[in-house]
Length: 180
Length: 190
Image (cartoon, rainbow over all chains, first blue to last red):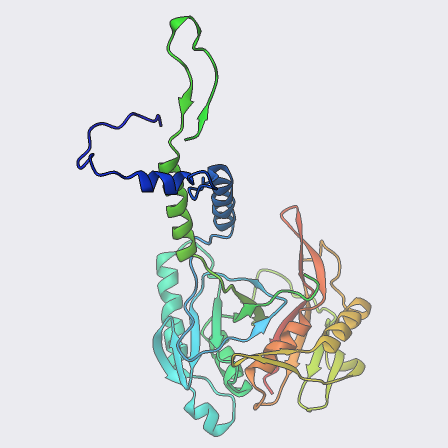
């Protein structure tokens, strides 16, 4: 960008010597400071590279409201599978209600959750219609609050297995290893 | 602004110096940074796997030969003061060892973490001595069965499963060797 001689300007008779004197310093140190573009662009490029490397195109899985996911160290990467969330006493399959845990908590005994069973079975049949030539992976991800009792966890686990999902994964927050 | 001086202005010819306009470049970088920051994912969700041990469909075309039952590691967490690790082969108890239970609970912003480092270390040493599937070419994994009472909070279950996955082994799949958890976890129904 070349510097050009300015043309005519309005109010040219107004003396602005004080501005010029202030900017150039008037014999003292000038207040106009130059910005080093090289270091700024270097910084911006490094930031862009870092953010691009940590960018995830798949987005983030939504955690159901009221569910606090525990943390774990020895984890695997998330996979695309139906998500069964236990929020309070309600069971959700991909965000849709599929029964509740009231009966299990009252009886303190493991039992099959029929609504969950039917919902998962429906999901499995839908998958088989969409991919008729593929083997069904049978994977389901459980999103369970940290304070839910083991009897509920085991009941949901068993219900999922009965519905044709033997590979059950528990969603956790990844925690770095102590050695890392 | 920024430019590149490549000479070539001699002899009355047009200069071949080129000048890069920095303003759109900085604008582009700023917009890219803004987009990446807005769409950034700072909490990383993962999973811990478990297997319901459902047998496959019967194969009438293949002859069934009786096989020796494999050793499985049973982890009892029904008592508040200890874990019991039991190696069983079928219905036979091979060995039993107790590990003191210390619930190392860390609560931060209502999010709890429970760690059992002693249990993880003991399971690793037990698997190294008794585990049957330790070779990288072995497609099968040793099984761990978790026995818990009905009132145990889920966060404690995750802490124990996390400890069970402490031992790692090499696993060769498709010519590529990777580290995998050495044990496969399932729940006992009783």
